[in-house]
Length: 408
Image (cartoon, rainbow, N blue to C red):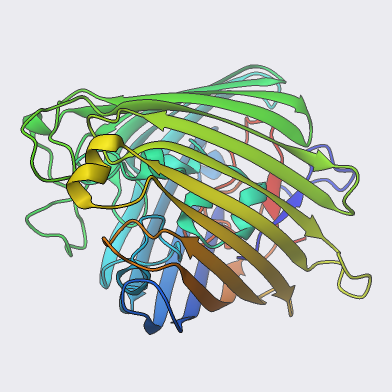
């Protein structure tokens, strides 16, 4: 990915937000699973995303923002070869061309106290369960915990299928941010999984409610606590049971600087989900990332992270899998230019749990990211910023006091 982290309190002021922003981002992954996993083999994945944002100030509509994003994905499944449940590449998806986001937002207040309301097709992960330090890593569990990402009948409203929703964000004071959102309980259209506009609203789908509170200990350290739940009871994702349950859970995370690591920051994240509704009952993730490890490469980033997904007892028995799947990842992000980044990546998957009997796997990857934008130096909190990761967390909205993301 091409994210670097800059403190919101940085001496370098962000450029003023332009009225119109356009961006394109091409991400290509080359992967090989030479041994282990379900069946091994090499794959090539691709994701092209194009975004646009429009602010209403020129038209006398202060605080109004319109945003849209489309993407195109191609390539065979890496996870089918590895046999994992924590998808190794966060751009893996069924080949399709899709409208992913299309929303309108109205903001009130200023940078110290504000309120915002947003409606439309939205990515839940742009506001919830999003850890900026973890955005360096390619495994999808570091973008959003699998206890939440694998919930529901068709997942929550995240890549690659979004849902219609309504979100409110409140900044009552500088350290605090509170968010709450309601989404269609079943994203997309299960009858037309490759549709360009994958929306089908049905009463029986119910809704997904999610809420999160952030507390900023400083400009570069924060704590997040969130909870979520589906209004409709559902059958769990393993055979042999007729008992329906309401999928629900909670999570908490901490991220902040590591003074003993040059240019370093780290995080911890833990979550729980209803073991009667889904196969992942618990999750723990942690990692560190450092920028400027080598003096000659001040903008490069290096990191190590671990992700452990605990499997519910009923699911283990029904599927014949282990107690947990653990992923260990190390990655180096080499920034060639402002527009081009390459990133070698190595992941070890212990007890892959997506396929019964899969062996431990060691997989090698290379990510290549090319970005283009107008204007190039947009505000890092702009929704159409081309520097957003390909499938991971997004920057907070401009009323948030948390650190922001940029290429600078």
